[in-house]
Length: 314
Ligand code: GLV
Image (cartoon, rainbow, N blue to C red; front, side, top):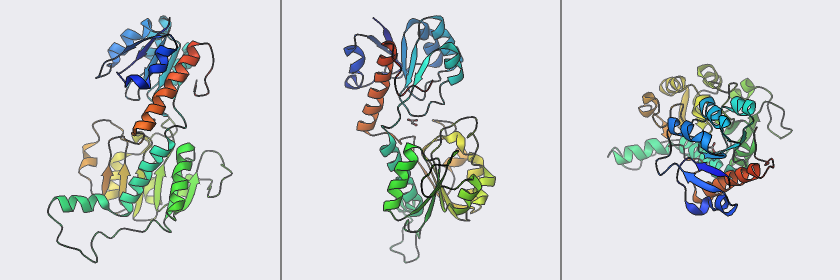
């Protein structure tokens, strides 16, 4: 019998496959485990099913490798919370959840694009504060999605799902990726993408290469009065530069679902104008979170059965 640690208690039906496969499951309770507790439990288990707020660093992985830890399955498509280099060195397989959250995340990106183009955050705030003085022919004037140029940074599964949605809205979609995609709308440099992006939406993972990739210089290369949307990872955008760009009109609006420092975003963001904020809910639908959990559990069971799952990243 193998022991699997699920770092926080999840709906039993989502993780039923672990016990169905004959494994013993322990969980980190409703609050989840702190880093110290995770490192203390890692040597006692064969597998860890983690979430993106767990810091699975080299301390945790080395503790696990000193015991019998074989796999960490992250219930997320991003895995920047896991020290992949350490996992590789220690022979621990890491799994993620690609392909099951693309639609939900793309929906939230579209929501932010719509909210920014139509200034719905500012409009709702004014209404709630009693600052609506009646229908106004020049009030809350946003921009049409139809004809607006959308630049996608990254064209993975989520970027493609955003592209399909944006085309239905009549947006003109461009994208840039590390390698030519062979898809219409590809531009071969970030600068070129920025120069055509009325709206820039980020769909790359956080890595050493993408950290801080969108800073003041990049925002200034966009057409003045542009919009930035980030549903990927907060660390890709320089948040202070973003607030500066919103304050001085370089950008007209921005929409963020992710932050460099979660769950306590940079306070400047909270006071910034024309900024629509969501608390990292890109994949937060019942069906999607269930599918993500099931996929992480499946990867876990496959590794424990001696196979290499398709969703292994190392
Ligand atoms: C969510 O942010 C994920 O990476 O799945």
